[in-house]
Each structure stands twice: as structure tokens, then as C-alpha cells.
Length: 89
Image (cartoon, rainbow, N blue to C red; front, side, top):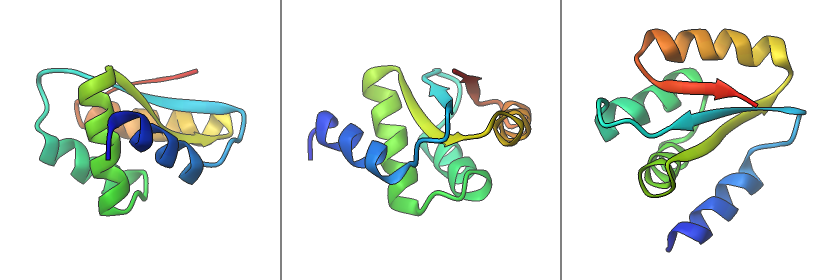
């Protein structure tokens, strides 16, 4: 599966709720840490988390969750405390 197919699949899985939580690539975190955080805090399946980590690695960023602003702010706080580089758009 190539990167474009991964992006399409991830975008189909995540529903559109107005705001997006974007995960950005950094060279600090391991794939295992990123995947673990996505599974634990964003409620991704293992496969979703692996796909998002791969997209971030190749494209530099990936939308990991769409929801209302208040929910994303809380999630951003948790992920930031776990050293992930995230922003809300």
C-alpha cells in the first residue's frame, strides 16, 4: 500500500467534525511511542496508528482526529505531555 492509499484510508476512517488534530513529524519520538500514544489516547486501532505514523514519517503531518474544539484541546494537551508535536486546525 503506498502513501496516497494510506492517506485516503485514514481520512475515510476519521469522521469530519469541524476541527482536526494534526500530528507533525519530529525526529525525537520512535514509531513505537507514536503508535502507542495514538492507540492509548486517540483510540486508534493498531493498524490505524501504524498507518498514521507512516503517513507522518513520509508526508510530515497527518490528521489523527476530527472532533469539536473542546475535545481536541484536551487531547492535544495529553499528547503534548507525551512529547508529540500536535496542533489543531
